Length: 240
Image 1 (cartoon, rainbow, N blue to C red):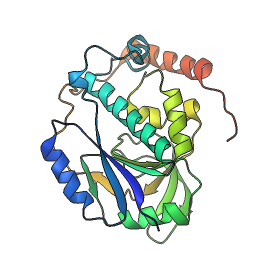
Image 2: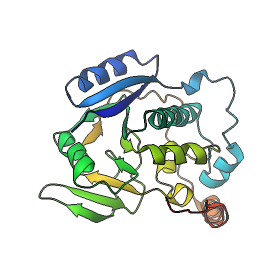
Image 3: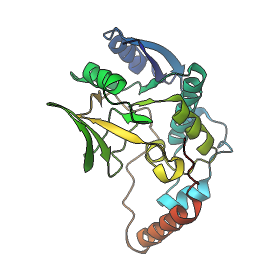
Image 4: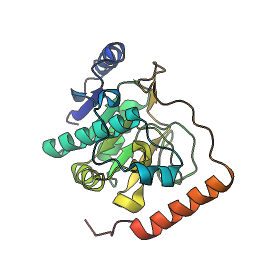
């Protein structure tokens, strides 16, 4: 199996996280990796033109923080690099940790099951799913709900090109956008048990505090706005 092209996203100010991530990458001999300096949202001078705050608030009930916007833009740069390289690309944030089944997952996704556009290797919350392929100690699945998180996933160049196209307007957090199939119509699978997890280092999103749950009338209005948005703003689907 040829080396898997890998992008490590890390902020310039995150030296400790970055060094730990590099040491972890050195333990794998089949990753051809390079560093991508992420966009630090806390250093942005104003909000980028892609960001649609009114739509974000209408659909989510709250605005994205500067760090969340920077995270989205950083992954967008990684998608551009994937298209330039024209090869499947493993995208990692610098708080990742390999689990014992990591090599197994990469091998299976590269050889035994390749019917995917994005392969999720990490998730924060457990979700119901449908099994697409099962082995004695693993499953490749389609998640029914958003498992949250974007610490690790593999993306193919054609899929990266679509994400770049459809992210000209930023109106939701990155992990929600990755799972938003009504927008980009990409086939997203997940390898379970997830072969990558977060390593517990301190977050770089210091401006994102715990948000109070949206309740009552505000929650019902948000649900209505989301339903209307899905109905009228889903992108048309065209065969590959």
